[in-house]
Amino acid sequence: MTQPDTSRLTLGHLAEGVRRMAPLSLFVIVFGLAFGVAALQQGLSGLETLLMSGLVFAGAAQFATLELWGETIPLVPLVAITLAINARHLLMGAAFYPHLRDLPAGRRYASLILLSDANWAMAMGGRSRKERLGILVGGGFALWTAWMIGTGLGVAFGSGIGDPEQFGLDAIMGCFLLAMLVGDKRDLSVLVPWGAAALAALAAMAWLPPHVHVIVGALTGGLVGLLLPPSRKEATP
Image 1: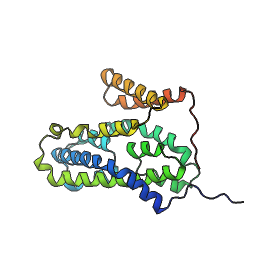
Image 2: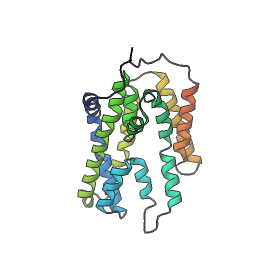
Image 3: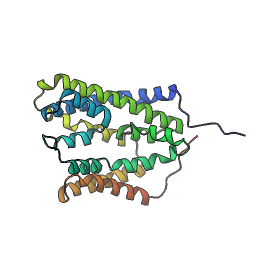
Image 4: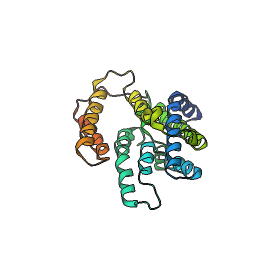
């Protein structure tokens, strides 16, 4: 007897992912606005700023590249910094692989196009495979849309905001991600790896070269999570 395809998404699953992520996407609009303002101040045109947000969709990496932007762009440092900041996606993809392994290759990789910290964190808390995939894809679309709206607002009104840090815009994404990761959970299997990753990243920021803390924190958190005793297995209907 043929087993039903439990991983096939419907519009209902995607809509549920959009609905779940929509309230949190409001914070991403503010973060995108800050990027739009910073990009204009760094000399990018409005079109270049929108294209970067639409095609790259990596907030922290986009901010980092602005520091190297100019008339001549150092390509090797730019690539190295981008890889370092986004190295966490290796662990995020590995952690989510069990929910994607039964998909055909095309659908598997297409599902990860809009992968980000927020929709990954929320999807990992889903109760079923369909719910996780719906949050990953639908939630990713909601975040991308909010990011583009925010970038557009920054491009449109950037001339009126001289110093984004004065309004605390630089802290928005960090606070947002912290709330996403902790939420209402009290499970030490969640808090211990992230706590270890945070401490390792802070130590690396103090004593190691710039941006290395991203890799150090990711590897430390992954190692601690690997060494923890296994918790009860999640159902994946």
